[in-house]
Image (cartoon, rainbow, N blue to C red; front, side, top):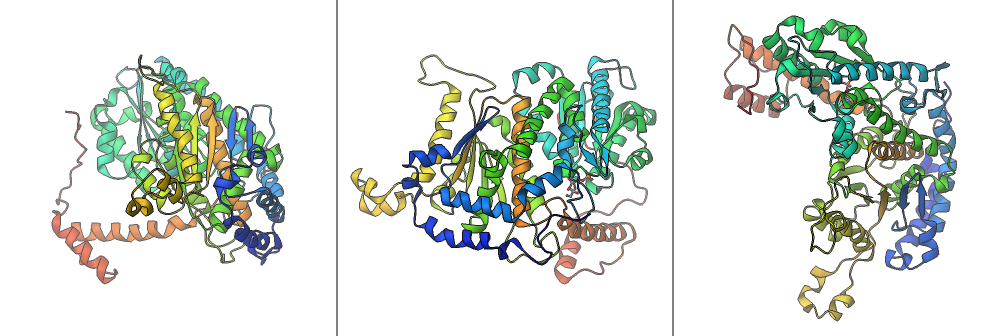
Length: 576
Ligand code: F6P
C-alpha cells in the first residue's frame, strides 16, 4: 500500500524545517528558563487542558518561534496524514505489512474502524463481550476449578507487551477505592521472567485448586512464556491431574492453532489480531482479560473509555491544542535538537510505579531504530532512553544527576486527589499535599536552578559555592490528572502511546516493528542447544568465540549434569 512518505531517499533531516530548527538551537541556548518563565503570556500559551488532564509545557526550553518551527516540521513530515493513515487502518507498519490499530481496541461499539476494508470494531466487541461473560463466571463462582472450588487467584503468564502494560494498569488500580472493592478476596499475579525464581514467586502461597492461569502471548512462540506456561501446566497437573488444564488454564493470543496444540481448549482462548502491536496490546484481551478477572469488566471498560477519549482528542484536535502531539514534538526537540537523549518519567503517585517500565518498552522498542521506514540509515539518532521512579523515591536516588549532572528532560505527573487520603491531626498538610509539595517544587528547581549570587547572599562559604550552584535551565513537563481511577489510567496510557507515535512519525521511522530483538533470541537458541548437548552427552563446546567458550565452560563446570533419568523439579513454595 502506498505510504504518505516523502520521496524514499528524502530524510526529514534534509528538509528546510529541520534545518531551521537546527539553526534555532543557538537562539534558544542563549535563553534561560529563569527568564522565559517570567513571560506570563508565554507561560499561559503553554498550558492546556483536555478532559480533566492539564498539561503545562512552559518549562520547556522553547518559545513561540520554537513552537512555530516544530509545527512546520510536523507539516513537512506529514504528521497529520500519518495520524490519519493510522486511524484509517493503512499498513503503516510496512516491514510487517500490518495496520496499527490499537485505537480500535477501545472504540465504542458504534464506531467504524477498518483494516483491509473490514470494520474491526464488531470483532473487538465480540471478544470484549466474551471476556465480560467469562470473567463474571469466574468471579461469581459459576465456573469452578477441577475440585469444585472458586478460582480466586489468577497468574497471568506473558512477557514484554504481554506483561508490562497489564502490570502497569493493575498496579495503578490496586489502591483505587472502586477497583479495590471489586477485587475483594482476589489476587492477580504476573509471571514474566523465565527465571525459575519468578516462577517460585508467582506461585508462592497459591493453591492450584483455586488458581486460574492465563497464558498471554501474541505469537504463542515466545520462549520465556512457553516454558513458564509449561511449568505452570506441570504445577497444575501434578496437583490435580491432566484433565484440570481445561478448567485452570486459558489463553490470550493471535495464534489460536498453537493455543490448541498446547492443550488449551480453543473455547477458552481470547483472540486478538496482528494489527495490535505487542507493546500496544494492553487494551486487547492481553490486559482486559486478567484485569477483568481481578476488577470486573465494568471497571476495565472505564479504562478503555479513558484511552478512547484521548484517541479522539489525538485524532481531531489541532496540533496547538493536542496533548500527545505537543508532548511528542517537544520530546523530539529535546532529544534530537537540544541533544538530551534521556527522559525521566516521574509520577508523583505510587500507584504509577510501573508506568516507567511500561513506557520503556513502548518508547524504546518503538523508536529505538537506526534506519528510516524506507531502510535508509539515519544520520541522526532516533529514540530516547526512558527511565523513572515515583517521586519522592526518585528524589532520594537519581535526582542529584538531573539537578547538577546531565540534563535529563523530565515528565512530572501529579494527581489532584489521592486514591488514599491520609491526614494526621496536627500536621500542617495532608500526606498527599506533602507529596505534591515536591511535585510542584521540583520542576521549578530544575528550571530556575540557584546562582552563585543567590548563594553569596545567603552567606554560603566561597569554597562551597561551586558545589551548591544549580545551573537550572533543565526542561520538564507537568501533567496533572484529576484523580487516578480506571478512566484516568486509560487517558495516561493513550497520551504516552500517541506521543511516542508522533515522535516516530516525525523521525520518519517505523515505530511499530521490533527487528532489534531478534538477534539475541537466535543466539540464545544456539546456547540452549549447546547446554543440552554438553549436559546430556558431554559434548564439547563448539562454535562460540573464545570469551563465550570460556564462560560457558565455567558455567557448565559449576553445575552437575542432567541425571540420566531426568525428573521434573518444580519450585518449592517459598512461603512454607
Ligand atoms: O521482545 C519482543 C517481543 O516480540 C515484544 O514485542 C512482545 O511484546 C514480546 O516479545 C512478547 O511477545 P508475545 O506476546 O508474542 O509472547
